[in-house]
Image (spheres, rainbow, N blue to C red):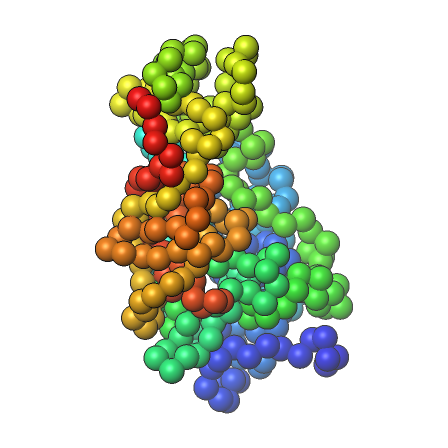
Length: 373
């Protein structure tokens, strides 16, 4: 075996040939390489794919995760590396727990993160149980995060490659799940993963990465919401934070906090942004960029991983944002400096350096400027 293909540590007791590893296989290059590396350890490896949706147009679409061609790709990889592979139909569960929630969040004026809800539900709860039922010693996935054995048990850490880090989407992982999960790609850069796939002759070596929201085939979020909630296009008022009526909108599902384009209220002296969405009155509140600045946020359903922690920490309020200095006081996340682009419905993930402490859902925000309503 070349140095490139030396399998990473799966953090299992020796001998590995007495162990069973279940790998979550989405049909992409990451989970395919995890399955191949697991097989190289000598352990018994079982690939499991959950069929989560099928929107017709997505059947032949690659890079969508858990549907159509992707399932066929996962099966082909399993055949190539000589492991068992099973497909489980979780379409109705995914529709009820992820897609319907996505629509409800938009209708409530919040910014949903379906990838986190998917990890909390079908991926790290149902798939976790499947792996247990199959008698596996662990469940391995292709996520770019690191599992570190700390003094008080398993810890979740950011990936070695900051550009690929997916810890934001895994903040709701429980300690019991983390004890059982393995993330063998967390210490690798993506180019190395593709090189491994190519060296092993896997057909997915150059396959594009999956989309952020897998069940929106064409990127039209509003169409998905409209299909589930026919009243989603009901219009309302566009109101300036100073109380001035500026125009009408065509449905709140077309707007998110921080949005500038698409407001269709020309003739204003300064650029205006969506500051908040008021679902009950169907009002879209707009204002200058300064009105987007928030000093803090109220978090709900906080998941705390591992040891107790007090003191300064850093927080990410969007998946692509850099962690910023903050403090957590009685469920209130207080930023060290005004933060922009913070919206109810998003997650705030808390860190001590690279160590993921946990996180929670943003229920509301506190403006850093005095509003005149």
